[in-house]
Image (cartoon, rainbow, N blue to C red):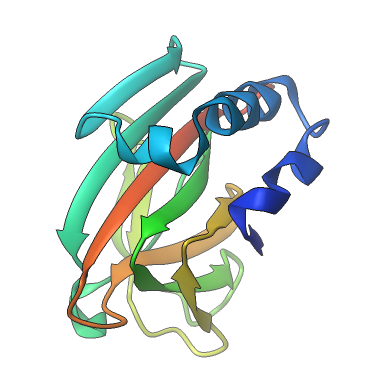
Length: 157
């Protein structure tokens, strides 16, 4: 997992073509353009890169869960507000599957409280989440509304 501010996102170009497509698109919009996207799905490059825009009040930690994906990388972007994000590697022995892999949604779900997990507050920044990164998102940092964009990037195999 890579965590940073949007002004530094350009540094992660060159990793893979689809990541470059996502970063170029995000940089072309800027934060105001991303905030102006309609709620729901926006297709950037077919099934290779798309984004989901959302607005919500984050949930209490005990209502959150870890998840990971097999076919897509996420760029989780908090555009306005803040939320708690969790991270642990999928090899963490305390990470227990609660919902087996669903290929239609490309997600495996896990318990919310594995030992050794790292939690941090993401405030107007991004987290680049790889397939081996079990991540927990949408968790309450405060009672304010969070404006978020999750960019889904197909892994190039």
